[in-house]
Length: 334
Image (cartoon, rainbow, N blue to C red; front, side, top):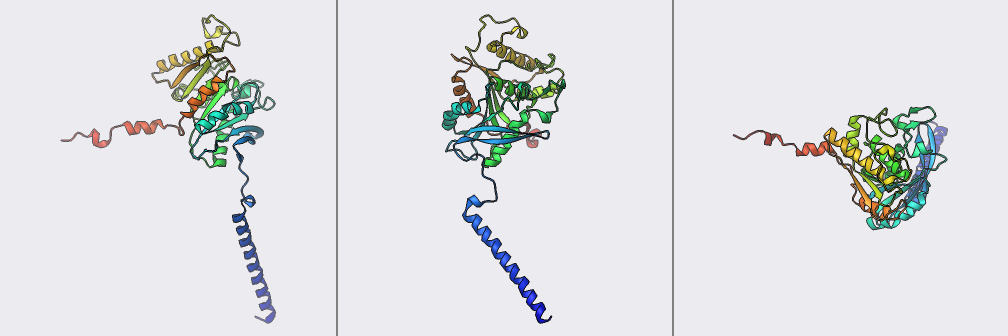
C-alpha cells in the first residue's frame, strides 16, 4: 500500500471513531435527561386530566376524549374501572363524581366520552351491533364494545399495569351499552359489569327478535351460558320510575321512565332462562334506597362493588381441573 492509500485508510478509521463517540454521547444524554427519551410521553401524566385515545375500527379512526383520575397511591396492580356516561355524553362530570371513591379504594378511573357526533344512539347504546341504514347486523370487529378492550390495553401499556381484568360501570345510556356488552361479548376481560338505570334492555332470550331479544343475532345458547357466568350487577334506584302500578308484561312497560319494572323483568327473564339451561346465574339485582335516576347515591354504591371486583378473570377450566381428583386419588389403594 502506497502513502496515499495509508492516508485514506487512516482518515476512514478516524471518521468511524468520531461516529462512535457521537453515538455514545447521545446515549449518555438520553440517560441523563428523560425528556429526551426516544419514547412518547405517557397519556396519564397527573392525578387528574384527560387524553385523546385514537379508536381504530374497520379502517376508521375516531378521537375519543378520555377523562381519568389516578390516585397518588396507584400501583401496577391497582384496579382499572371504566365509567360509561349517560345520554348527556359528559365524561368529565362522571369522572369528578367518582374521584373521591377512586381515591378511597385506590383504583384508576377512566371515563371515555363518546360524542354524539361520532357515536349515534345505535353505535353507543346498542354497541353498533346493528346497522340501521343497511338493515343488517355488523361484524363483531365493528362493535363499539371493542373500544373498551382497546383502551384497556392502551392504559395498561401506558402505565405498565399488570392487571388482567377491569370493572365497567354504565349509567342510563351507558347501562344499555354495558348489559349488551355482557350479552354479546362475554369473552371481554371485565370481571364485573354494573348496569345502572338503563332505560331499555335486550332480553336474554333467543325467542324475542333483536333488539328486544337475541333472536336473529350471532348470540347462541353457548354464548348466553358464558354471559350468565360473568358477574353482572343490575343496579336501580327505587325512586327511578313514574308509574305506580306494575305492568302485566315487559312489552307493556311503554312509558320511558318505567326503569324499575324493566330492570326487574330483565333479571327475571335471565333467572328463568338460566334455570331452563340448568346453569348458575352470576347476575344479581340490587336497588339503591331513596335514589332517583340521577342520584349521586349510585356512584357511592357502584364504587363499593367496583372496589371488590377481581383484578383477573377467573378461569373456570382451571378451577374445574383443580377440583378433579388426582390419579392417585382415583386408584384405590390395595
